[in-house]
Amino acid sequence: MKNISNSQLLTLMILFLMGNTGVFSIGVEAKQDAWVAILIAMLMGLILLKVYLSLQNKFPNNNLIEIIEILFGKLFTIALGIIYTIYFMYLSFLILFNLGDFINQHLLINYSNLLIYTLIFINIIYVTLSGIETIGRLTEVLAYFLIIPITILGIIIIVSSKETDLNNLRPILDQGIAPVVKIAFSQVLTFPFGDLVVFLMYWKYLNSKKRRNKISIISIIIIGLLTSFSTISIISVLGVKLTQNINTPIMVVSHIINLGENLHGVDPLVVIIVFITGFIKLTISFYAAVLSFKTTFKLKQDKFIIILFALFLILIANYLFTPVEFMIFSKKSPENYIQLIFEAAIPILILFIYYIKRKKSA
Image (cartoon, rainbow, N blue to C red; front, side, top):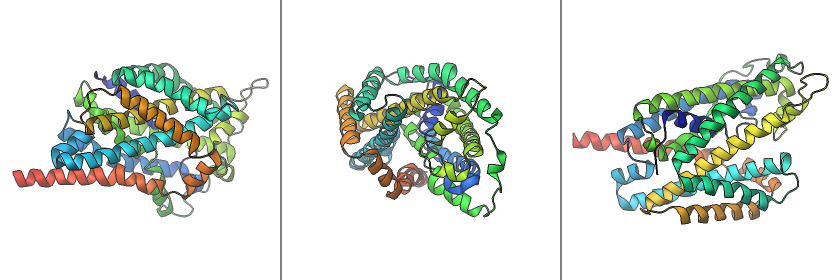
């Protein structure tokens, strides 16, 4: 296991936060104020990030599981280590299922889901077996030479299109700020900003730890602004009702945007962004589960864990739900509140106990 550079950490975090956010309409329960909810959630995410970074700064050379062991001992570590492994696997399952469904609809149309999941994980197994440094290099190349330029181009195209109508964003805050804050906390905070809890498994590998805080804050701000602007673009083109009733509104927008009399749609640009960012987010979440399990049981090799976990996710994603059943499950499950336990409650509790122990020992 080698280390990652500052530049690689920035691209890892940016692509991770972008993953799957392009597929769904985030915060649309706030209607035309969805973009405001995203900005509020970004500010909440910065507070949550402060908790993560405070914890990491106290133990700069340890990951989350190692920190738990230092503070609570071996038995408690095994329990929480297994729980966090399951949680990271759960995140990976959600990403895999959504990414596989997206590929089935827009890339490998009518192909077997099992084949799609297998192809995805063949690449993930190859990348993760190479270690965190390889993942960092991959994201660095993809971000600077592909994703960021395409994203900027796509936004410019949408904003300058004649299909864009900013009146769809009015009235602003007609129900007041309170409902928007509630949606920001209960829905947008956990996805995508709270997902950064996985980086408590990665920050220890940063070469220069002095810039860790700055890089992490910058990544949240970039994605918060970008996602908010993307949501403004989607609602401006589709309107609130249509945005709320479509599973992948960005694909609808990309299809109806006209670039000229003879050129229609920016579908290829959107498909590239969604596929690559989803793949990177899945890789990072999946490898966090592997690292969590490996650290919990102090295993030296992770090859067997990677292959076993990959097979488990493929089978679960293929046989547990159909896309329709998964949509029903997602809407009925208390997923966001479950995530708050792992992304907010436990890290805050760990940090609180650290301060209590330090005060007692002083």
